[in-house]
Image (cartoon, rainbow, N blue to C red; front, side, top):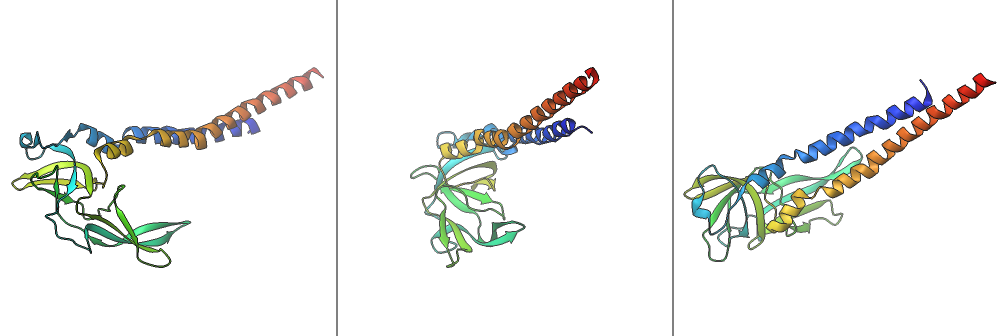
Length: 220
C-alpha cells in the first residue's frame, strides 16, 4: 500500500471517534432530562403531582441532623492508583434523606438521593484528612445551596428523588455547567480533527507527488 494511502486512512479513522464524541454530547441524557423538567418554585409547588419530573434550586434546611461533624451529606475519599493515573475513590459515605427549603420560611421538602452519591458543586467543602493529601472529606452543610432534577415520589410528605443529580451551586451555575459543551468541542477539534485533516492532506500530497514522479519516469 502506498505511503500516501496509509496516511489518509490513519487520518480518517480518528474522525469517526470525533463524530461519535459529538453525537454522544448531543444525546447526553442529563441535558435532556434537565431541560424537559419543570422548575419547582414556591408559587407553583401545589400544582405538581406524584411522578412529575421537576428541577429545583434551594438551600439545605436547618431541620437536618448532621451526619459527620457539621455536614449533612459527606463522603470520605482516598486516592488510589488506576493504571497510569490517580483517582479519588469513596471509602465511606455519610448519606441519607434530608430536607431543603426553596426560600426563607418555606416548608421543608424531603430529598432522596442515590446510595452512591458524591457531593459536588462550587460550595462543597473539602477537608484534607492526611498529611500526604491522599485522604479527604467532601461535605455539604446547612444553608448550602443545592440544585438538581428528578421526580416527585410523594406529596405527603413532599419528597423528591434527585438520584445523583444534585450539586451545591445555584440554578444558573448548574445550568451553565450542564449545557456547556463548547470547550469539549474545541478540545476534540484541536487534538483529533485538526491532526486528522493534516494527515489526510499529507496523504493526498504524497499520492500526488508519486503520480508526478511516475509521469516523469514514463516521459523519460
